Every structure is written in structure tokens, then in C-alpha cells.
Length: 431
Image (cartoon, rainbow, N blue to C red; front, top):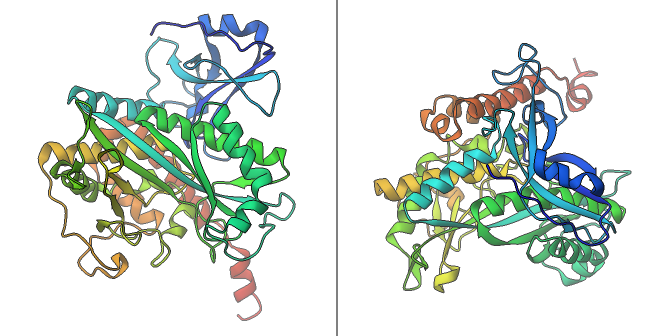
């Protein structure tokens, strides 16, 4: 791939360069500005283990990365022009791409999974646009608990109380090149939601990786700990990652039909429904991620779909041509955006190509739809379905598929080997 030298903003002394790992966590290095030109021309070396570590940075032998091959290097090359970070004068950030030492893509780079689906769509004359909504908690770093109390969802008084940290998150992340549309308090103390404006699928996934990293940095600047953990408190609302999809061809929204969802849109929904269960691990790769998949929690437990209905798995927003879209609501805020978007897009494009009809539309409570196809509510079932899915293996590619499922299986093994404080408190004195 052609190398490009990006000019630095005036006054830059340090460049942050990074990309998304196996879990969509942004990892990279800080580079002195004096060394930047060389990075643009020759790349920046990292161990390929960056793509084969879990969220705690633990590493294990995998088919692509192991002690036998010595954990070889790959290179990062800047992909975007460095943008100033307003809260760190003299520091700019550039998003990177991965390149193997053989100058080919890295097989376990999750971004290439989505790249393949974007190319597939482009070959069909389709541009995919995605808007993302992410929920997260702002916590006291000493107690790991919210500083506020009670539910203040959409409350402008609660919003004002949090403005000293949410204001900078909106304005400064926007200034750093990620277009923020809005923020609001969500359905629990300390929980907020921020919406990122829609863009191309790859661009939107890149933005999620950067956004989560920058939110954590900015929260720390203001005395908070930000977490995108899917379910930090069992009794409180979980952190979701809602994806709003529209497909465009010849300058027109393929999902819009005189204020309603088009036939292409319905086939996209049909494709999503067909694959939601076997691809569930892409939206929730951890044990904790499935704790938020509970009835009556505003997180779906089946493949129902409906118009402007937040009890279903797939919500349709209708109206103006530009606004008509399909919202998929099951993923957790901690998942890898590349794998999530890639599996969603692959399923939706299959639906269009194969004219897959969706189930009957749900007009009432999606949780009570007796004939709705279920989606997994625990990781063990999600992994089982994924292991049985040749479709998912084809979408992800053999190496990425094996690595991602190995990580989830290791999470299951880790939790199975624990005796929790709850068990001790409940059983120690009573047996």
C-alpha cells in the first residue's frame, strides 16, 4: 500500500498513533514529532501479539501468534492526518493501519473483516452508512461507584450537573475529529449516552475505537473513571452499543420508500434476523456482556423487529429519506466494532442478495412475542452457536474466527474456575 506523509499541526511535539486490537481497544505509541517523518515512510514496529491479547493484556498460544513463531512484528502506518488533542497542548493523534512484515494485511487485524464487507457492498454499488450510540458510566475512581444517585434519564438538571465532564467530551472530542451529535443522562446513576454522527462503515468503526479511548482520557482529566463495561452493576442498566444502518445507491437511501421501510430494507432485516443468534458473540464476547441481555431491560433477547419499538431486537426508524434506517440493539458497548459491524453488514447484504423475508412485524411488547426466535443470553450458548456457524467463520476468516472464539472460551474457563464472594457469603456458614 502506498505510504503517505502527513503534516503535523503547528506546535506539535508528540504524536499519538494507534489502532484497534482484538477487543477494539486502541493501542499504540507516543512518537516525538522529530521522528514523525520516518514513521510515515517506514512505519512503527509492534509485536503482532497486540492483536492476540485479551482485555487484561494476557497472551496465549494461538495459531497465528505463539512461542514457536516468536511473536513477530508488524508495522503501523498512519492512515489519518494527525489532529490536535485540545486537552493536551502540543499533542496530536493519528489513526493507523496495520501492515505485516511481508507488506500484506495482518490476518488477525479485525479491521480487515469489515473491509471485506465494505468492498463487497461497493462491488454491489452500495455505500454503507452507520451511526453509533454508545452508553458508558462515569464513576468515582476511588469507589468505582457513581457520584450521583437515582435515575435521571434525559434530565436536564442531571445533564447540567455532569456538564463539567460531558461538555468537554462533546466539544473536545468533536474538535479532535469525531463528530458528536448529542449527549444525555441514561437510565441509571452515572450512566450517559453519546451519539456519534453517521459515516461510512469503516470510518464509523474507527471512530468508536478512538472515541472510547478519548472518553476515558478526558474523564480522567476531570476526576472520573469512564467504563464501557457492558454490565458493571447487575441491578442497574447495562451499557449498550446501538448501530443505525442505512444503505445508499446512486445517491438514494435504499431503505426509504415514501416514508416507510423499503423491500430492500425488509430483506436487510431478514438477513439480520437469520444470523443474530450465531453472531451474538461479536456483540458480546465476555461473560459480563451477556448479563445485560435480560428481559424488560431495553436489551433484546430475540430477533423481533418493529417500528420505533425499543422492546425489539431490530428497531426501524421511518420518515424522511435521509433518516430512514435500521437500528440493531443487542450489542454491548465493550465489543469490537469491526467484528460487530462486519457480521451485521454481512447478514444484511445476504438478506438483500437472497431476498430473505423477515418475520411478521412486532407491534407490541417484543419480550412477550411467543414465536420470536431467541438469541443467546449467556456466553456458553453464544460460543456454541458460533462454533457451529460456517457462515460466521467465512465472514471473519479462519484466523480471526479462531482467535476471537478462543478468547471467549478462555473467559468462560476463567469464570468457571472462580469461587465468588457471593458464593462464600451465601454458603460458607450454612453448610
